[in-house]
Image 1 (cartoon, rainbow, N blue to C red):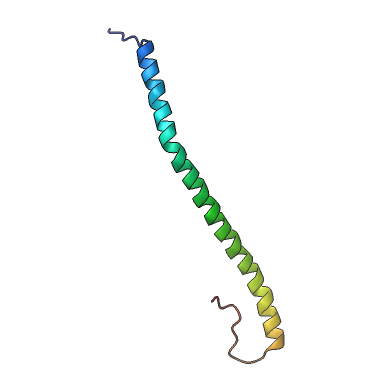
Image 2 (cartoon, rainbow, N blue to C red):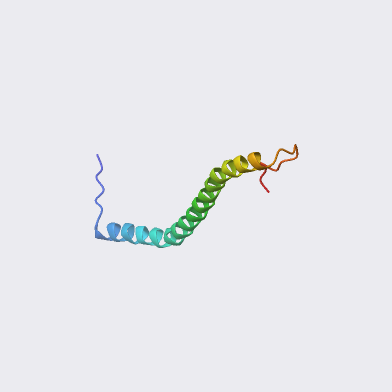
Length: 75
């Protein structure tokens, strides 16, 4: 049986690698958070449009009996 002892140099090197990795990933995390916020905002806007369209359609159906309605069509 061979036992390898990890001395202080090994733990310092591992700690340095972890710090380097963390420093490299930090900007990527910030960018991903911004992308998530942008996607979330687009989703909420889309969700809001889905709520607005039915009420708009209801008003159009009451006001207009013409066959060429724009009710429910996204532009």
